[in-house]
Length: 329
Image 1 (cartoon, rainbow, N blue to C red):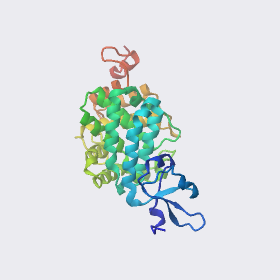
Image 2: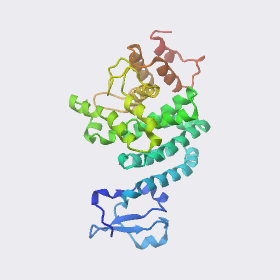
Image 3: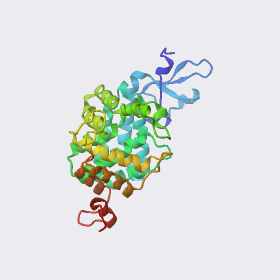
Image 4: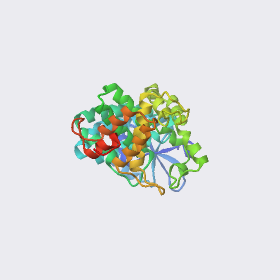
C-alpha cells in the first residue's frame, strides 16, 4: 500500500486505459478503503493475470505520473486520429474531449506541454480533410462545457487561419491559444459557470477573473504554451477600451480575433434560461453591430464570417452580403 493523501490520487478515464501500458495503476480496496497496486508499468490492461484482481469504482494514478499519462494519451491520440478521421467528425471530437478534459483537470500541476502536438495534428489534418475539422464546431452536445466550447473555438480559429492563409506555425499558435483561452475558468466556481440565470454583478466580477487566472496558469507551465498568454488575457478586451481585464485599446491580433470567435461560438451554442442559442446569420448580425460601434475589428470580423461559408468573395449569398452592407441588396 502506498500512502498518498486521498484527495491527491487522480482517477483515470476507462476509455483511456488502453494507453496506460507503461503506467502503474491503482485501485481502492472496497473493504479497507486503502489504495492498492492494480498493475505495474509494462503490463497491458488486457493482461489475463488482471482477471484475478477484480475492482469496483475507478482506477487511479499517482500525481507525479500525470504528465507521463498525458503524454501516453497524446501518443495514442496521434495514432488514433487518422482512424478517427476516417470514421468521422464525431470520433475526432470524442478523442479531443477526452484529452482536453484530462489536461484541464488540474492545469497548474503541469501537462499542458502535450497540447501543442495535438494542435499540430489538427492543423495537418485540416489541410488533408478540411470538412472534418470545420464540422467539429457544428456537433451539438447536450452537456455544453468549457471543454466543448474551447474545442469549438479552436476549430473555428483554425478555419479562420486557413481562410486567411496564415503560416502553419501561426495557425498552430493561434489554434493553441484558442484551445486555452478559457483555461482560467477551471478556477471559477462551478455554480457560476453553469448558472442558468443571468449573473449578478458580484458573480460577473468573479467570472471576469478567468482571463487573469488563465494567464497565470499558462505562465506557470511549460514555455511551449506561453505564446497563448496574450490571447488568453485579451479575448474580452474591446477596441473602445470598455473590455476587460485592463480596458485596452491596443490589442493583439489573436486577442481581437478571439473576441469575435469566442462570442460567436457562445451565442450560437450555449442555451441559457434568459436567451436561446442563435442561428449563425443572426449571431453574425449581432457581432456586426459591435463592429459598427468600433468595438470589434471589421477586417477580422469579415474574414471570420467568410471562413464559415463555402462562398468565395466573387460569389456571395444575398442574405450573407446583407450583414456587411446593413441594407437590402
